[in-house]
Image (spheres, rainbow, N blue to C red):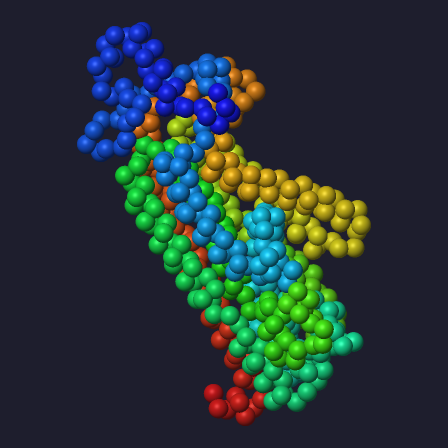
Length: 492
């Protein structure tokens, strides 16, 4: 028998026949079935149990996903993998990761395996933007900032997502910002800032519309799953769909901040540079996780008052961002783990453990981000952070990409995963239920339908909150640009 040709339906029939030989009264029992499908008007099937050592001896290997069984591969593929690709494209990334010919499996694994640092970077960016605009509008010491200080701060909010030292023609981006925005007449600076603000991509186009389609597809999948309560493959497909919603949340967070992330939009303001190309743009956007460090570099090139510099260097804001990011990632992962955990046989099987390990890796990467930004001068600390970060990132790639491939191929459909990973080493005591549509399956079906509905609701609320935050922040920024010149302020 080939390693992927294990037939658990045949195994169920074999054990069923053995059970009948042990108890003749079961011969005409209609509930003792290995081909039962969920029907609310029909009683649930009886369990067909076999101990794990016997299962491993008689049916080793795993059961390959079959083309005719759509719930084994079409549901997971269409339900969470393909829609997730759209949201990967919404997450800001450096130019070398934006080229279509380079968006291969490795590049996508980088994106999905590092969603924790990306989310915490975007959340910190949003907190910083909010506090800077609040400080400009309501100074803590009661003294108003000069027009030049306001202009510098507003420019920093919009362009602080690029490396300040990058640029062609002998000038860095920070030098161009100082020359073309900070040290010109307020009316000229106002026009430049308005032009930068108008370069903002529409939140609805970036993530709003894709999220609506994603939620719509998820709601349909849940309604369809309500007729398949006894199907383990459907349950785990819902779990993986909830897990991959972390991509949706990260894309939503990164699209709600004000910073520009595409070099072409900066060139539209400062002019196209010589020798520039899409592969080698003059201005380099940084990764989301590196925006905090980049912003502090900008603060060294642009003179800011202490109260505004304190906001940029605030450790409290970074801790708050880390806490919010951990919550945003842990919630969907916890829901996904719960679905797989309570799908019979109850326990930590392969799918639940995969999602749990991924979540732990993301939390570890967030703590690495926090330690790196809190102490950049200690070489020992930096070395430890980089080593741990690489380990967390490598294991996150294995769990996200490897786990997805194994789910689609059917590698997780084996005796160990069915019994639970606690019996991986010591098989004694492990039990495998080979029958579908048992009462335990139906009971868990009610649970994972409720959890799936909760996950979809959370995604929708998160997207609405991101939209409201983005529109509010854009309006506040426009208001501060308006107030730079008295004439413009009177017109409004």
